[in-house]
Image 1 (cartoon, rainbow over the protein chains, first blue to last red):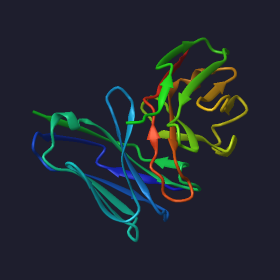
Image 2: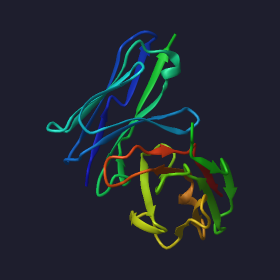
Image 3: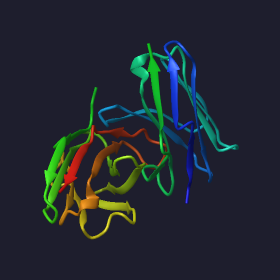
Image 4: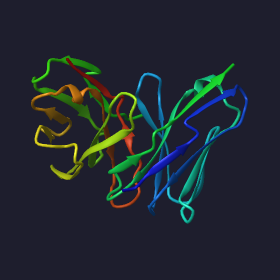
Length: 109
Length: 115
């Protein structure tokens, strides 16, 4: 079973602060997804990465396959970044994902 | 920007009733998935579908569940006889490829409440 652990579970930051969310998984995989779940429940895919680093706007995701660890960073955080951030890893196939429990991020003005 | 659409956004049903949740994946995508999230719990994989058949399914996806692609656009999840524990948010997703890392596109979800 591929355990996917996220930390922290909850995070509160002031607007402008740098935020880091971590994800560790217990078996080797070739890619990892970072997802954002809106307060209304909808899910948006932020990144899918298999090595190194990806950047999209103020979001940066890194992955270390050897250490089975990934981080999601939010630079210059804003209240609209408030959401649950979820990492997910493929198990037997690319779409058969095992999900982390999510990190609830609240950014206050 | 192309998107995955799901209907209904919320459905309330009585225990024992049949429910069909509908999804319209992105038009050139080939792989389709259903996931569910019980309130307060992790998202869980239910089933993947490719070339008009199920590719993989989880232990959750028992005989009460079925999926089909009745036409070229819709992808449906049917629950034959709903139970209280089927209350959850159900997410459809699609991707263009599966043989290599493929980005997944999720719908907004269908919230099912079983009374």
